[in-house]
Length: 350
Image (tube, rainbow, N blue to C red; front, side, top):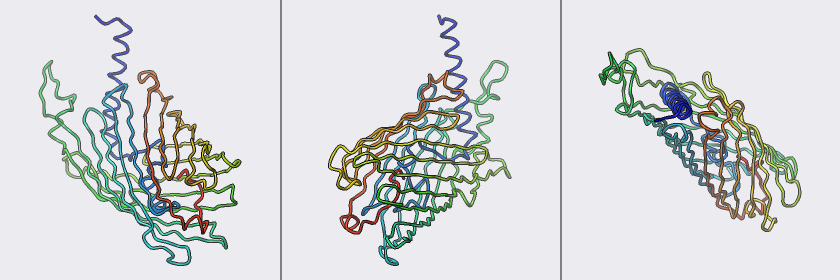
């Protein structure tokens, strides 16, 4: 027999799980988000396509959230991008990239599978090519689905009995659409020790129609997501780097603000920082939602990062503070010519 305390905890978990499942179904018009937003640069801003020193870049990210209260919300994605045409005008170049991500949430297995292709033009300015203006365009295809057989509806329970299929019959299990995104990015290497990057992007600019309901004239436009990011890279000595960053996103009635910093320390040879072996730790705060912690290792063009969210929102009691866990892996193929020409991109955070 359950004690009162156990019954209370069980009830809290059921209520929270129900809220999360309902939220995932009703908030179908919301995009995904990550704690380590540098692990998915092409999702963050199309202008970041090809925004790195090297021959090509491959990224992967995995996120698991809310496993303590319901069926986990799982997101994973990957991308590849590279310069396509170099020296279009002096140091300018055109870059291209592809990214795919899949998000599954709740007991209804609400899934979002998206594939995006992007192009970005990088214009270098200044006598030392220490400033860059990037413009990016992106287009993609999305398919969202839900497993109706795994959901239960209030009107299916009638006079103490269960009559399946009432509300569920009014829903389509899949929706699909095309979307268009665009972004701008400005970078400036102020000196050998300090550089910064600032960007803004608009997603779902065409506001594609999406709805699981079969009713006519019930199409819901996917809200535009506007994001802005700011990052700095400060070389505070031969081995220590400080990398503060800020991200703001808004979509329909939802908004997100993340601020904090990483601290990286080179444990190998510090001659070329971009490929030196280093360890990093970071502390971040998503306002009104979670305290975020990151840590990882960088070596020979690889970056392996771990992130954890400690929930500080109203759900912290039922979730015991547990939020999301993330793993990111990135590889940038070094290019010896970049080292010789000393063309550098500000802020490796992005």
